[in-house]
Image 1 (cartoon, rainbow, N blue to C red):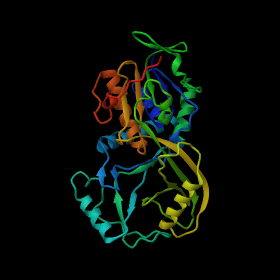
Image 2: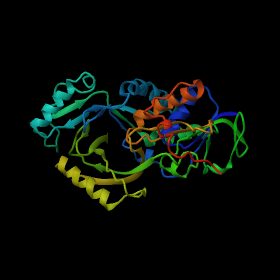
Image 3: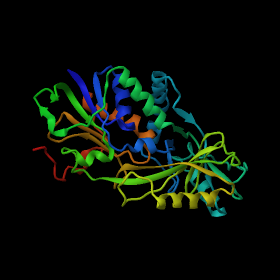
Image 4: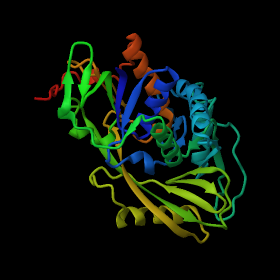
Amino acid sequence: MLDYILVGSGLAGISFAETLIQQTKKFVVYDTPTSCSSRVAGGIYNPVVLKRFTLVWDAEKQLQLLTPFYASIAQRIGVQVDFKLPMLRKLSSIEDQNNWFVAADKPGLNPFLSTSLCTSQFNGIHSPFHFGEVLHTGYVDVPLLLDKYHTYLHSKSMLIHEPFIHSDVQFFEDHVLYRGVQSKNIVFAEGFAMHANPWFNHLPLDGVKGELIIIKAPELQIDKMLNSSIFILPLREGVYKVGATYNWDDKSSSPTQQGFEELISKLKEVISCEFELLHHYAGIRPTVKDRKPLVGTHPIYNRLHLLNGLGTRGVLLAPYLSDLLFQSIEHEQQLPTVIDIKRFSSKKTSRLK
């Protein structure tokens, strides 16, 4: 008998798989052929919400787990995926500078915001008011991580490339049965595809379409992540990832002319040098209106669990949430109320007929 069946092989599913491996649990992963927003994610981790100068929920704990977690993955798949890189916030006025200094002096934010401005000049970027530097930032190469981790799971016969048919799950007292496979638990990490899940589709998961582009700009020559109205992430010499858009209405995963024009317009407000478009991507981020993830166990079917709603901060959240969910399932440790799906318990609970 398996300990777990995992449904979904994006960042959330892979993070829970890594947690299970570290805990020597037996499992298989269903790589469902649905749109995976993880593959078009920016991959940036940053402990501060810069629009409001607030700390991300449980940021310290998330950062403590992040480095050893991705280091373990890198050792397992044989490639580096976590890259430590400073983030600069472009300041646009004296008022911006003052707001930065006020935020940097706050006890909670002080460890994450430099109290000295970065006065470096970067070719192609006009920055008369300089930059504020966010500390403990970097990015994860999510597409590389997924490709290599899928290869690893496949080599261990732990990855199944086929749709998961929810109606084929059978329930027994001490296990569930799915197409001849017995397992103690099922964890669903389906992202926006959760809307087709009959046990969890009552939860208020929304999707925010995000688009990003990859550009070649040899004259730009910036070696740090830049945060402004968009982010600019250096990938390799002269090549940058630029994002992202936020569209609450369009639920398709195809790139759009509107998204492209928005990104190009904002990019031209930040840089003045020439650039060439290399790629244009889009995906649907699984988000929740209260801006917190959806984690927990079904109120009736206690062998069914959920890991979803990671939104725009998946690389920071996924390792931490995976550990919290594992501890909740295996050791009955209570989940934080802000992420527990029980916060929506007053909603109608969906059952599979």
